[in-house]
Image 1 (cartoon, rainbow, N blue to C red):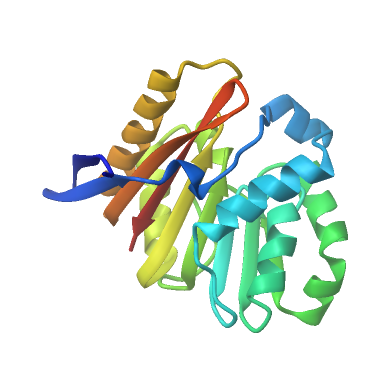
Image 2 (cartoon, rainbow, N blue to C red):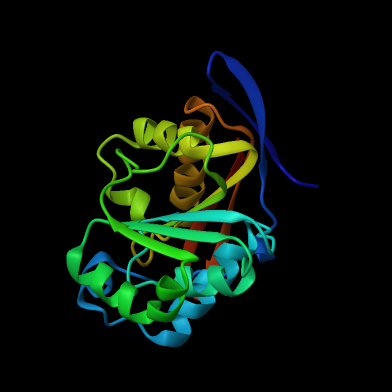
Length: 214
């Protein structure tokens, strides 16, 4: 039976259900390797394939990736939401350049848009996106709840948020679970509902995944 955790947000309480352990597979991904562009294609592809699956992304939906890195997730999301709109924002100029090269055709076609910037100031109007994804990037947010509120602002009612965080290698499972629960509380505090979190094992490493509804 799924474990149920109660968290509070926006002055009310909502249930945070544990995600099934087989929902997501995350491989180790350090910030240094990300910036250097040294992540293997296979690892990155599997990471994003599993992460995007949490969104249940549809053909004509609009999706935003916050911290889109070198654009692997953008490329995969664009393949799924082929009749929709895929946007990404990334602070690193180098990574954004790689993302633009990777997605050049889709950008030219007008259905992928990439911008440089931060999660704290998203350059899109309110209620723009059906789905929002952020992988590992939240670890670097100085004010997580405010960033989540900004994400909440640009999402449509009924939209889904998915956050995936891979802690440092050999982080104890209990600490990863605590990380997932912490982020579930933050997601609730930012105004999301039906928040769920889970932890999974990948070799000797663990990862946290959090899903919330707008």
